[in-house]
Image (cartoon, rainbow, N blue to C red; front, side):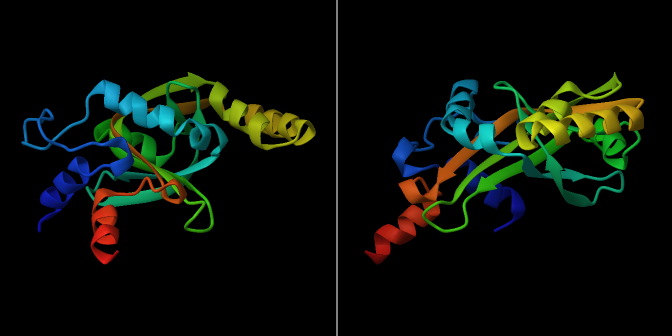
Amino acid sequence: MDGDSAANVENVAASPSQGHSGHGRPRDSGGRRVMDAKQIAQELADAHELLSQASMARLAYNGLDGRPRVIPIGIFWTGDEIVMSTAATAPKVRALSVRPEVALTIDAGDSPGSAKTLSVRGVVHLTIVDGVVPEYLAAARKNFDAEYAAEFERNCRAMYDQMARIAVEPQWARFYDFGAGRVPQFLAELAKKSS
């Protein structure tokens, strides 16, 4: 099975708890099934707790040389966007401006019963801002005590003349909660066969 076929299977597969059959869904120009905005919004709503608590994600993108990269990166969920920040001069900024297609995963839990993950595919919107990206500081205030967050902000303001605000526009999203039985379709089918 080639990579595109595997991606198509993943796009069709959904949690049995959500009752997605994959039949009759719209397709993109390459014939791959796509999610509509309502489905994406529901997946993000279902992942609200994970998004609100998460401070890190793994971002996958293609570098200027066309080779894939995956990096850990801090995130902040605004309620509408997954926002990341970096120095305006970071190599990923130039790469994302040329190839804005990304994949992102956010996960939590250290056992099968507590494992939750959100996988997102989409495009990024880059904005170069003077000073520090507001969501960067908001993430610090969420994750650090007040004294350390204030020191972090002072240091950031001294360090960055400009930053890149990287906002992900989801075009596909899937939330899994393994402890609640919300698992990828192929796993649900394997479990059903074995029982």
